[in-house]
Length: 323
Image (cartoon, rainbow, N blue to C red; front, side, top):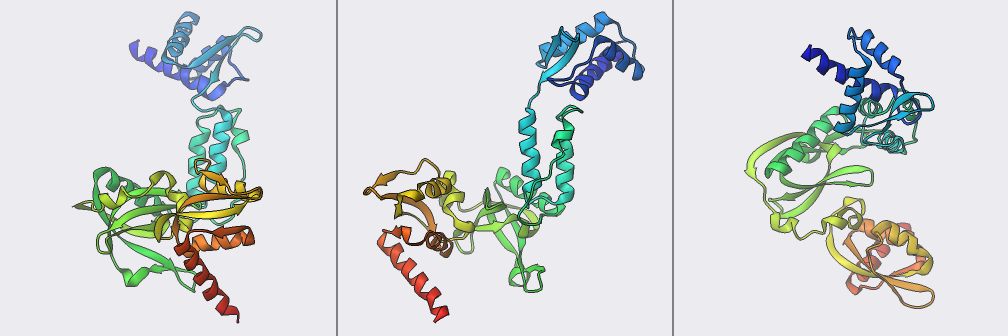
């Protein structure tokens, strides 16, 4: 009898999750028929007690007098939030189609049967999905290394002109200390300390292969704490390395949105005159940063002297290719 009570309340809860939402309900007779279809008998009084217990547990089950139905009116995630998750999974090039389908099925399990049709969405992704199941396994090992304060070894892959991935440096084994996983430019990156070169480096996670967790404790804690983790992805253009510093830049006023979209509203903007403002940008100085500046044309000027000289040299070297 006790086993039937436990199973009955679980089946009642399953029915609410599967068959009801804020717009669809089940009657008491529907619940009794559901239990009977699962070879369980139930009385109205016992089902009322089950519903009350589930309400005490925290489920937002409500009775609607107009149609005499019970509904699970609220869930841990709203339908709009589930749609956003599905869109993000569809659009992410980091997730293979097979894995995306699997993940979306799990998301659908959080919705009622009536809501699932609205989760069957297609979102255009600019680039093909690229990460295999092995990529997810590698991510697990990297997260484990961070949690357990351990180093890892792996090989790193690069594209060749035959459009295939090959091992970089003839299959060199990298030994690094993982400190941070970063989502930037629609890719996952590993920020790790390279003890051999004594500096922080970045690796695209989908290009890492044969990850092995090592017994050695991580190195580079002092270098890691020097970086601004809150602004890490915005300061690294394309996650390329370089010298991290604040660079003073003058912009035309109409570029305020471009700057704030890139660096966030926390950066300080100083009015210079009626047409321009200045901002001290936290960036890693690299050719990719210079490319971003160049893309804004003559409406922007680097004011930090040493960086301005580097930018001028970058422009001259680029221009020399077209003489």
